[in-house]
Image 1 (cartoon, rainbow, N blue to C red):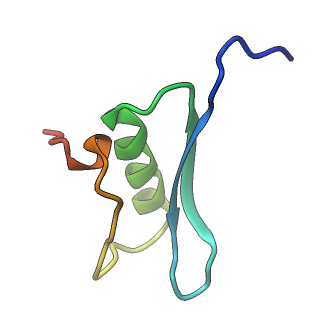
Image 2: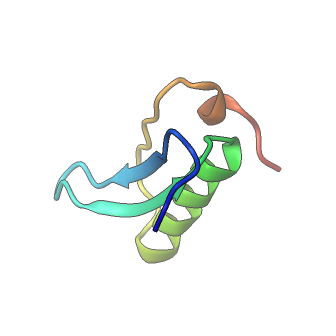
Amino acid sequence: MRFTCCFLYLAVVLDIKTRQAAGWRLGTNHPSELTHGVLLDALSKHHQPAILHSEQGSEYLSYKH
C-alpha cells in the first residue's frame, strides 16, 4: 500500500483507569469530524464518562451540532 500524504493523524480516547483505547480514528487530516467521530466511537462501546479531558487544538474546540 502506498500513501500519497505526508502525515497521518491519530485521534484516540483513552480510559485513564485501564490505559486502554476506548475508541480511535485515523485520518489524513485533522478536522473536527475526526475528533467527533472518535468520541462517538468510544461512547458507542462504553458508558458515558464522568470527566472527559481533551487537547486544546482547534479541532477539539470547534462546535458540532
